[in-house]
Structures are given as structure tokens and as C-alpha cells.
Length: 527
Image 1 (tube, rainbow, N blue to C red):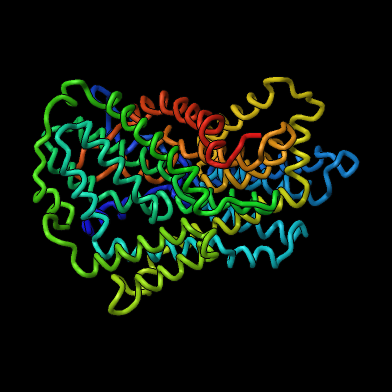
Image 2: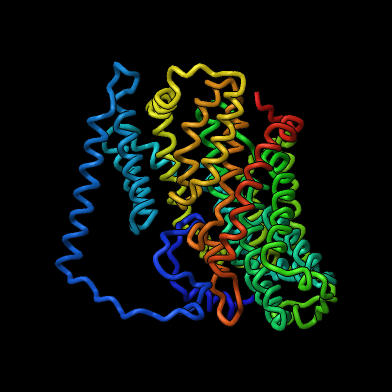
């Protein structure tokens, strides 16, 4: 499905993180083209001589090491409530944050180096690091990725998506039908980057059919990654950060958030925020005339462009794949009744979808689609988050930030609003959503308890707010993926900023509204 398109996009170098988030913004906006109209390019800058680059790099490393040394010396000792292990964990976490935010060093390398440093300094045991690589969450993602590979190989996703969007008769209908299709993919396809890659051929097919309406195509180019990111909160496997949050809650409070409960809490927010964002995309990217002009979509042409067929019954392989997916989702949602863990259910689904004469893809081919860097990154960041919690660093940091603060009548609400705002805006400093959760959640949990709030509710709100990462093309891999599609007009940096300005506050407001009014009705009280 869409092999040529995917291959063409895969050849573009992208500075992106292992969990589908973006890397550093290293060059001109790919959506802006070579040069803006009316702007002349200046003379080419001279490259720095090698000795100067070496000197600058060495000076930066020395300054970074000096800053970490000063931090270590400035941190208090056990007399102030910070154990030696917590002091070391804070310095290592600060080093990792600095490397992620300020350098181009591979994010997986930074995470593994930080985890090894925690082991070598005695903050965590070596068995904890090795055990993280075999954690249930890692196996859950592996199995879910194999299952997603089988779904993709069957052609089921492209066919269902095309069958849905060809029903549109207006631009608004098309936008909301695309949103619905993307929302459904969150139920079975893990990671935002995987869902974005899955949706790309459908977008390209629509772009070719709507080639005479470039404004609508650019709106769709922004709509697809926006919905992919905001709808991820629907499921536990929607992003690696969700699994990290659940693991940290289980370690620090004794109770995590399972697949069924996460689906119950996250799906309503995902639906509301995604369709709200769709309206914002339409308002910021299209004119009233664009939205009023009827659409005349040719189902056969769109299906041909997407590499699928519609109007004919599902073939036996697609029917079997659909049955396996529905069975897996049903078992995930009813785990409290049958007692099977989500990981075991996912493994059964992965085996079924790759079984000879039954499945739609071979096991070797499906395992090749597993994002192994993401899994290594997740394991390392889970160790980092666990170290901050178990060493006492997170509790000390929470006390240092609000020590001596007497909570007033509105203090809890102000704290919750601050958590949501920081979680939504942290992508400007730390692009990796998993890394943000590994650092923020261990601090948020004790602070929530100190303010008399339910730690699970505050941690869930923080993770949900982190779904907003739309400010820059480098903020998330789905955004970067749709920013430069060969042969297709796409959004510009200004379009992204124009959407982010209202979308950020709206997303934060929705998260706060659900925290106060909706989630308590679904079993997650704020207090």
C-alpha cells in the first residue's frame, strides 16, 4: 500500500527522535521551499575551519561539564532531605536533559548512557536496567507493532480509510471523516509515527485527486499529523509516554492505568480534541469559499491512488485480519473479566496475524517493522524515571519547589493548570514525549499528593496535555513527515504557528475541563 510514496518519503533525512518526536530544527522549514517569494538569498557563508569547530565543540563540552559539576556541588546533602543517590540521579537527569535539548547527539545514545551512568554510580541495580528491556510494556509494544504490520500488509487500513473518506461531499465532511479514520487507527496501531506513515498514502491519494484545490490539500497536510498526535491519548499504546506514565504510577502509588481504563478515559478526550482541532485547521487554512465549494471525489481514482480497491467484498485475508484485530481489542477492553494481561493478548494477536495460512504477513517481515530504537529509548527512560522516584530525588525536588508553601483555596487548581501548561509547552525544550513523561511524572506524583489531589488524575492530565506538540516541524515526527511530501503542496511554518496559537490553549482547556468534569464520572476523581 503506497510503497512508492513511503519509499520516497523515507529517503528524506529527518532529525527525529526514536519515539516519533522531532529532533532539532537544523535547517530551513521544508514547507517553505528554497526561498520565499521576494526574498533574495545572501552570499554563501564560509564554513568554519576544522580547528575552530574543534575548539568550539571542546569549549561547549567543558562548559557543560563545569555546569554539571557546579550543580552537583550546589545540591544539598542528606541533612536537607536529599540522599546521595538522589543527588547523583538529579545530576545525571540534568545531563540527559541538556544533551536532549541542546545537542544533536542521538537521543537513544543519550538515554542509554544516562541509564548506564545510574547503574555505574549505584543509583539503580544493573538487574533493573536489564529487566527494563524485558518489561511487559516493551513486549506489549513489540506485539502491537507486529500486529500493526499484519494489518498494513493485508491492505485493510487503506481500504477502510478510502471507503470512509469518499463519502464526503464538502471539505468539512472530508476533514471530519479523515479525523474519524485516524482516530480509529489509534485503537490498534502503536506510536504516532507508525500511524502517520500508515496515513501518508491516503493523504497523497487525496492530494492528487484534489490537485486543483491546493488550499484544501495544504489543510489536509496539517490536519493529518495534528489528529494523529491529539488522538494518541485514546489508548495505552498510542504513545510510549503513556506506558511510562502507567509504569511510574504503578511503581510510586501501587496502581497503574490498564488498557481498558485508559481507553475509557482517553477516547472521549481524543475524539473531542481531534474534531475541535479539525475545525481550527479549517478556519486557519481555508477560506469560506474553499469550504463551500462542493467536492466531487471519484472513489475508483482515490482507491487506485492509494493502492487499494473498494466496492468489492473483503478478501479472505482481510476478513481474517479484521476478526483478529477486533478480538484483540475486545480482549484488551475486558481484561478485568478474563484476567489475561494486555501483553499476553497482544502476543496472541501477533502470533495469529503472522501464522501460516491464517495471517497476512510473515513473522520475520513483521518483526522488521518493530521500532527497536523506540523500545531501547523507552527502557532507558523508564529506568531514569524510576531512579528519580526511588532515589528520593523526585520527592526532594517537589519539596524544594513548594517547600514552605501553604496551599490556599485555589492553590490546587493553580497547580493543576501549571502542570498542564508545562506539559503542553515542554515540547519546545524537550521534543521527546517519552523523555518528558520520564522527567515530569515522577515529580508531578508527589506534588499532586502534597496538594491533596489524586496523583493518577494529575499524571494522566499531564500526559494528555503532552499530546500538543505542533509548534515547529521538528516538534514531532508526524508533523515533520507531512511537512515535505514530494510532488504535493503542504503547509508552511507560518501555517503551523497560526494553528498552534489557538490550539495550545484549547488543548490545555479541554484537558482541564475533562479533569474536573468528565474523568471523575469515569472513575478518576481529581481529589
